[in-house]
Length: 338
Image (tube, rainbow, N blue to C red; front, top):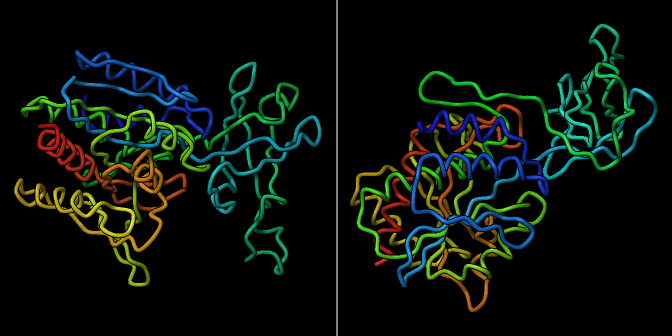
């Protein structure tokens, strides 16, 4: 399966933090249809482990599967409900959007409306809303009678291809990383591999690195590489950002094992894989922060995929960056697994 088609299936699936089951099923279905000699396990609170090989050296790749979303916090009347963010949701990204909620009786469509600009008072026109001011209108789908407090939802957004090998969608944080792990199997099949590879598709990163904490202890690999996204910008002089299409971003700094960084960067150079370097002075804000601490400590690296418009319905990635990340992962596994 081509990477762009893989990404479409992954991002179109529903996987709000704590409710990733549909996305796990998509991952397992695609892997079973395309690869043999893999084994599948569900561990802890439900994270998915996919294993390849049975050698003595164990290499693990980690990617969180969950996406940010919404939860029904109060049903105000027969047509309207209030919501709260699950993970780092910016309320400004919600206005004038369709939302889809999973209920006990099925999917439920809602609309987050906004007052027409003609009717807005000058004093409120330029103000950003808070969650206290946002309501979801369910009159378009029969009202709130099927809803319960705690039902989870996302913006109704579907992946779209863009010019120049780019794709835009919700949930590319971190379905882009998930796709890189899955595609790494393709590249590894062309290399010598004597070790054991474990792909860790984790729950709940957006709400506290939940899956990675347990899975790093469970797997206890010799080497771990966390794959996530990082901030991309094509022209932003005010922030340290990375360019779409210029390759995976390899982290160096406090939470990263120096020898792992050196090995990743050397392998990229030796194999003509363009890459970028990100300095991480303290917490990386990724699963690497907890993976490195498991048991007696795990040798850990971090590779990130540049992402425009993070935590929005128009997140954007370069397909080439994902493929190069997958290729670099496979080369690392081949070397480290010997």
